[in-house]
Length: 168
Image (tube, rainbow, N blue to C red):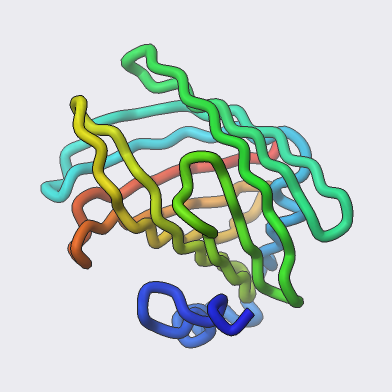
């Protein structure tokens, strides 16, 4: 559990401190329970949008364990599926696993924010790159969640992902 306190070399508690007590409060289990619709894009390091996508998600929880099924539909016609298993570990920590995630995703929620860090292999034009993701999510009003993810290789941000999610 101590590993959950470290995300990308700095304490997530310190990184999440500015969001402590902010509303609406983040509750990963509550938000990712039931159907969710999402819209997103990926920008390269120059800020150019290189892909856009829509996502349909359905989450369900049984106690401290949740399953989140995602179906990504990219605007080029590609479809990708991911199934996350999420486990609460303590009061604010979440551990996640999925088929294309290397090891475990480690996350923590505080106030209106959630931070998730993990490693994955991403195929790009026939080549697969192992990258680290520093995922930040903020709870908004009206059942909306905004997700900004920094995709890093050798410590440098090579792309950014933005996703808007809304409970259905």
